[in-house]
Length: 253
Image (cartoon, rainbow, N blue to C red; front, side, top):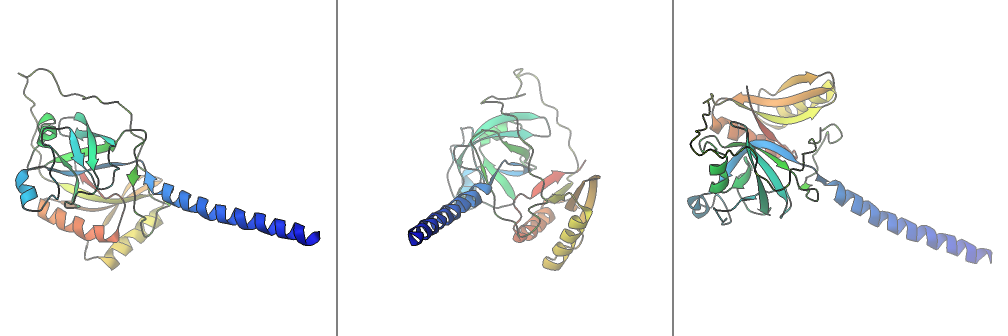
């Protein structure tokens, strides 16, 4: 009798452990999906870019759709041109198209035209908005617990904001000097930011990473500023080797 009770307890514990392992796997998988936003340069689709193998897939250039490497297919994003605050909703139709990691997305010419994007400086703010959408994040090597998760984006529905209806009204966009920085990460503690600076210096050839204090509990690690796009792209390609989830390119005031 005692043996049967012991055996029963053993089986219950064993099955519980197996279930826990399975649950843990689910938790681990689920934890890799986070809300997402990013500012940086987009790549405006052109058929010649595909012919030159700079974009691996063809896209319907007349549609409100984008390619994105980290957002699930069929998700919706809000794309804003910070130069004029025009915004538009677009659908992610592929997350396995190949293009340079320097660009946060590939957009169609229609989107670029609707947002009056400067093709020489195609800088955009991209925010995941659909409730069931997810951002597929890789595990960073360190400081995951410190990183500031992107703010929740408002769910605006499938609408177009601030596009303007007066066709006679010209959008006057002031030209600014090209000046951008790379945001590596935000930290709660200054010591963590300083450790990140040491890591960048030890593991890359980047010479001048810096810390910007945003508040008493927020320290930002940056690279730059950069006054030309080639140096910006070179530094971006180097820092991405450290496998951060969400590097951003920030326009300096």
